[in-house]
Image (tube, rainbow, N blue to C red; front, top):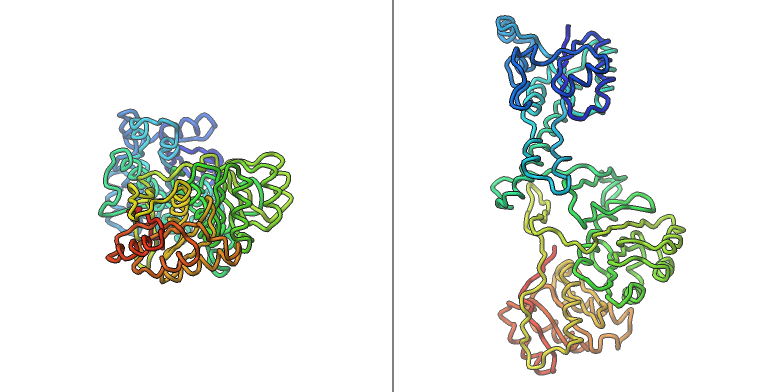
Length: 516
């Protein structure tokens, strides 16, 4: 008689699967809670201690760790020496192993879970059985996913056995399952102990949240995976309340808008295109912030992403409904705002209650390169103590605008320049290979949408130092009256001297914010 060993924490579908195996001539071996569940529901089942001759002990920590179990799983059926040893040792083979593990993930996601509770939910015997069965896939079927129960039963009914091809697929899934499980444990303990966040080896694990129609381009397959646990305030924890499924580019662009938005406490609107800000504004209320952002770049906002750190009210929704927007993400929407915006079937509306929550300092920023990954700490800092390096210091209004513009330029692709005034971006120079090109782009952008005089009394922020005075010269000619940059160039003094000559205020921030 063929035998199946069943030991599961998640008992979804296990009763029906076990009954089907019995009908197909299998005997069932089981442990602890699974044994009780099957027995109480009329399945003829053998307790694992009848096979091992050894009672479960240490509060169930030791059940299946025994040669009578692992020998029956690991023996190669086409190896005469293996089969003779089983006969000598009176060990019977096990053909199917069904196992899902102690609920470690569910345990650590509980609020205020204790470390002791987490440790108790680290499975030992389960991974050992799964790996043993997965290693011996030519002869053993290992099931770690409820979704595979029906397929295995169907193959046995039709062919009398599970094919090697299916067993290899199940084995692959099983090793992924245990790798995911072990990585969750490792990551949890790393955070608890405060061990090095950039160790000699790094293992990452994510769970698929959704498959996508395509990636950045229609010929690329794509999916969205989430961290475990999902960080509070992250895009992965947002709730979509209207519109069709988010695309790959929607998610990437919305994340760019969201990261910038987190820099601000006051009511702020961030408009993003291709993960770069195209307009940013802060104001005393969301309506004014949106109107300012729209006026700064009505062209790029079309088909863009809007992130807002206050509830969207009726007035703001009316304004937003006048143009095509791909995504709006906010803490909430008023009922009237929803009525207005949900009339537009192609807009995606997302809520994120903790929208102002920044990434944890133990989070990692990861970039994929050919053959590896680049890993760094997240950039949660803005500047050191500001250094006023010119004879004229910025006014309070200029200083407020300088900080505003520096927040915006921090989240703009390098080389980046942001020109702003009255807590509103006027022009943004993004992703240029020369800083002077980024400066000219920002100036031209502002003049195109707001007029020649818009830049008078404005401020300019740069994500890195000015290697030459050319950017300062262009800014002064355009009407900029105050500048902020990280400093650090051998030519810093030349730029300072030029600012002094024209009564321009310059502030050194001390922190560079390259973003590639």
